[in-house]
Length: 295
Image (cartoon, rainbow, N blue to C red; front, side, top):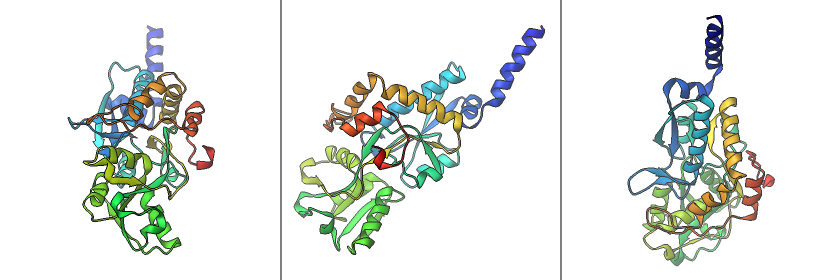
């Protein structure tokens, strides 16, 4: 009887020690994933309006690791649509527990949120119509451009606009889909966004050959990471271990191919983006560093 009481007390003490997302998960029985509407191939909705993508698959591994850590038979996954401007506030206020998409990890954001290991490297460029014949950033002088509100990209656009005295009209869009539509309908000549996201939008456009991605970039290669709440030490440790295990395993090559070099839903388009040498190095030595020079 005394032993049973002791063991029961130990279990209760262990439960009491849980904090942050782990405590919330055990108490409520679910984790909420923030996802995007059109961030192909990282986080987007399929033809049944269900969240899918490379980042969604990675987050599923994190949830599985949490489930094992908490020794739960079931841990429900709930989904919440987020945008560039709402993702950080919704994470901070507890509406979502993981933001699974194409969010740039930088030093400024790390003052508000944390990230797990980098899952992609990208650079900020612009997409325009081929018929516009805009070959460079200087070619945007005096033009109307668009970029999602709250994104790293729109900050870069404004910085270049000021520094190079380009005289651009920079319009904030609600999300990537709206921004691309503005170029498609002629309301903006260019859409400034991460090159991989642009590639996904072009691949799923009505006429993919009508668009071109700039060679000029507004940034150096930048890391994407899965966001989680700042100071949630135990949860981050699980997320880091789960992602590092995946990235360093043979499974990673198949997962990458599934989303980047094979046909993807809903239209069966192949983005045909092989893994870069820098990306291979990042997967071999997982890191949450926001510094582009790390990669």
